[in-house]
Length: 607
Figure 1: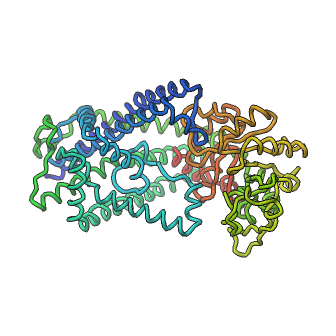
Figure 2: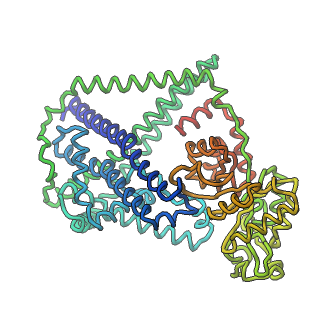
């Protein structure tokens, strides 16, 4: 194929992919997801609620409405698989066969028709694997809506602090990666060869077994080179575009041009990301054809009859209508960028240099400043200027309240017994190791009474009602202790159990409450609690804004990683729970001292 024809050929394919992505993502955003939300709202309202979360989901899922929700979610998952995987495999196969006289609309219909092969238990299991497991291992083709599906950081923190858990976790990921690679051509047999789920799995495994060495080189090797190349090109473009303008003396011009340039680069990156699924599908499909051809097997799309055979001459020109549509699209994007850059440049300080106050909450007493849940940790958190200290309260065998996080004392004190199995006198003999610092001192297990005395007038307490002893009696007793010291305004009662938060709100409205959760579906702002404390992945800008608009505080937990710290000190959250108080303070200093270019880069990357 001549070079000019080749450019036209790839240009037509790229425009086809672009139109398809715009069409399908618009359908999902404007039709599929809103309908799913309406169905969910109806099912929730029929049970007398507006939301489900990690603190109270079981009762809903075990109801008739919960079964309806799961079925609706399965239907949406089927549609997502169709538009994100099936269509691009079929398209890339037809393109490889040079049968590309097709439209985005036609391919959407073909993709939805292809789902008939999944309408059986084995097919549903494969869909769940593609949607939920593939994003975890990062190999193969996943679903865009679930690409950020990941294990919450508070769980991975526990995993990586225990060598056994780490080994098991790595082992599971390796196993899942091997399984994913072994059956990576499953969809090609299913969609191109029109085979059954069982035969597709069997043949995919056999093809990979015979060609795994070449696959590693041709797929992983070249994909890695492509990613490295794109990263280098992006960095070079940013440097070449941004560096010259920084010498311009006019502040408005400098800021506006920088914003315009980085928005444009960011959109190019976003476009390449949007094209990642079709690119991966295309690469896998080419290898599928090549491996079969090497074995003397002719592969051909069997159930698409209306794809016309095309020769090289068909790609020599890009139609005028396509050129005009592409030109209009690019012009509209650049005009939008220009308008935004002018507005943002004019109001730069008002928009970007608003350093909102964020409370630092020392996790488990003082975080890494001393042994967890210890008075020494609390004292050091006070010295570092933390606004709150989060602690975990449990009841002893003889009815006293002590501070400990785990179900037993094994991790911190080498005693494999729970607080409810020991008396206060027995617990006072224990020492809590400083697991952050090998040279740190072991501290005694503190009581809630000691924490209240040590914190009064110096730092607020987030008291989490923890473990098997967390019940209504605990609420009553803790509230009584807090009131006895006149500390109602210095304490908030926290729990992962939504029922306990509802109990506090109903019986002690004068007490502040905080609901801890790691997922929420439905109307988030309707949840009970003065403070909604979200796991990192849940704390999106939209949800934070929704919570604050409802007059509640939005706090994120547990922010320990450097990238997470930098992300949330630049967010609108009201507070950050962390094991690393000093690092979060340093992150706030970095935030306040950022240059214009750093601020713009941070915001463009967020967008």
